[in-house]
Image (cartoon, rainbow, N blue to C red; front, side, top):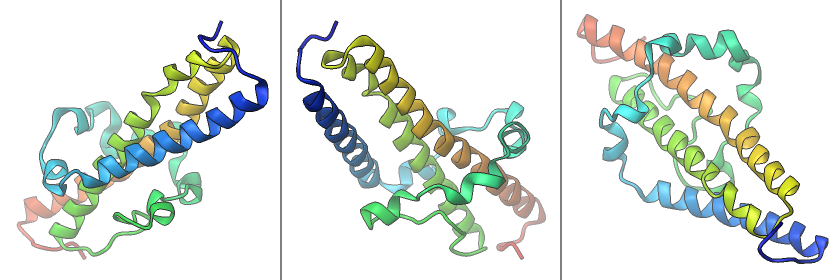
Length: 168
């Protein structure tokens, strides 16, 4: 039972505006975080060995087939680092791309966090739909970020082993 009983039309409108507010607000906050934060080696961004440098995401979910169809948030906000393609092949470009995948991943993890709030004004069944929406919208984007970062990490590791400053 929701904490607040509202007409269905109001509930739907509040849901739409609440999700827009949360998605945009969290995106703006994450865009304001300095890139230096994402260049650091933080444990929560590290890929697990089970991810096999992103290959596991491709094997399980065929990420390469559908990742190009996802909308990059930079096209909506008109700010940030577009991740549709690499901005260069030098080691610093690859590191910057990897850092921006971390920013996008954090943004989408945080975007799921408000989902339980929707139980306050939605019936329980609709609250669960909001939780499912949060996962269905954000988890594919998180998968793509981890897939791309795994690929970039493999390239930068190989480049570092060679001692070269660029990837060709």
